[in-house]
Picture 1: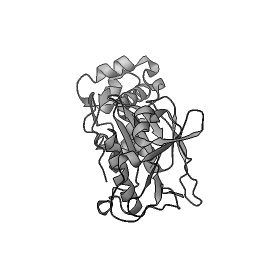
Picture 2 (picture 1 turned 45 degrees about the horizontal axis):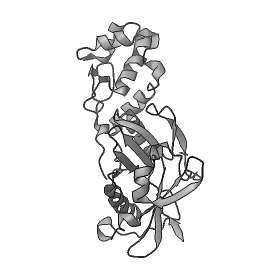
Picture 3 (picture 1 turned 180 degrees about the horizontal axis):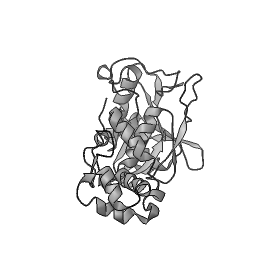
Picture 4 (picture 1 turned 135 degrees about the vertical axis):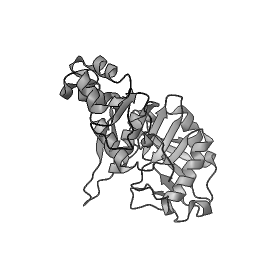
Length: 277
């Protein structure tokens, strides 16, 4: 019997031990289950699937649950990186999608593309976990990640799964992380800039060149927008450039008219420094 121990599942069956106190299976004993492009579920050894499968191209292996009484339900994020929608199941996951979507090194994104299955060395039970996000980087690196709502360290079932996934990913050159939520100011700034991520804002009013020329040297945000031309037209172009890193600002401070904007690449972006919780 397979116990679905996803972080969303009320049927979770992972033992509630600290990760440091448990044994993890050999990577070769871990299985991967995923939805093939034709829609059918496929299961094969993790070490083989990690090499052969483009997880960034796959649909979720299971839907995100709708929990009665919860104000936030599953949704869709339109990715500027891929030009398609990526599903999400929580506000924390949506925010991490924004952060990864803004990272210029990320070239592929998907949600819940794989379920990892293993036999627990201690209890001998067959257990599973579905990491929430997958990201592919331009240099070929791959990230499997979960998106906790707080920066607290993993405990219980999540800690046990993190130990197993960490070992399984390391064996194939992947990385597994529990992505720490960014600072509230950084999060607010990223949400704001995300509203201007679409390509239609790049040269709105044909002001792209004027905006970029206005910031060939560091300048306050509003002063540069005024210098570029019509402010209400120039600002979306400016925010689009900040989203994509062609212009830069310190996102650890609230964006405003006096924010110093400089030529890219972005610096001071705390959200780019993902940490393990």
